Image (cartoon, rainbow, N blue to C red; front, side, top):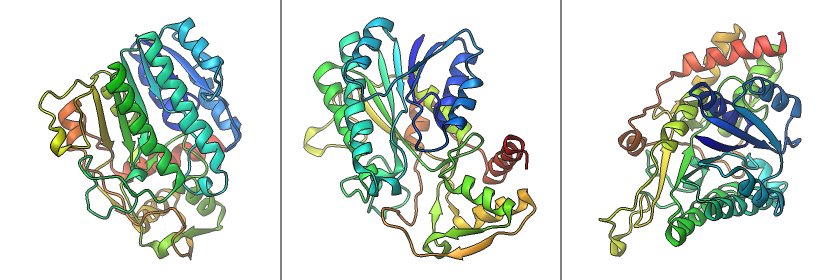
Length: 335
């Protein structure tokens, strides 16, 4: 297949691209290579892909109102994986316009491109953050997601609503994936594992928010990438039994689905830090802090719907995943 992969230079996108290329798909990778974090890491991720004859790269912002339609018309993609977004919960408190431009305007351009060129299936990144103030665990796609606690989360819920509209109006098959705390090699420098490993190896203190009373469904990036590809291969269909009088948020009368994709094994933050200590061979200097605005104290994914739909179930343990990250970090930064 010929696949558009947005966010191809990103953490998850570069891993997804590798799987697609290895199985023989033609991948057009798109990224704007912005400076939200060090662009060199993005260039280095791309360098692992550009030697493959099945890969071509386009530097473009998904919010480009002229460039995106032209790209869709020129390339005529079979399917689209949309992972490009302005990421980060806390940064949305500082620069909200970046989230509207990328996550809302950009997503509109993706939907329009798919609509007008007959794309067979759009898979896009949502987020566990859409669960917001919900405290019912584990988080299920059947739960309401009407109380986001960050603008980032609100834009991701908006994506799900926008996708449903296009599935309904234009019969465009769309699948949203709610990612749960992704970690692993080539990860983002603003995420906890990267920050903690860097500080611990340097003998510097780490900031531990909510006094360590955080629980996360940490999910290894290889599991996420495999789940994305499994989902791409199974376009949603209209649910003929859908009852509009008792609407279920997990499905629709339109060809639309949303799925959690997490490890289904939540871990205490302090246990996560202990795994980093084991693999670095150094003790962390912990500075305990209050919870930050926009954060939620716990996440826990019910992934039974994803397993039923695709047959895929994430399964990398924290100890294995953290060990692989620390090994990559030491090699990449020569420390």
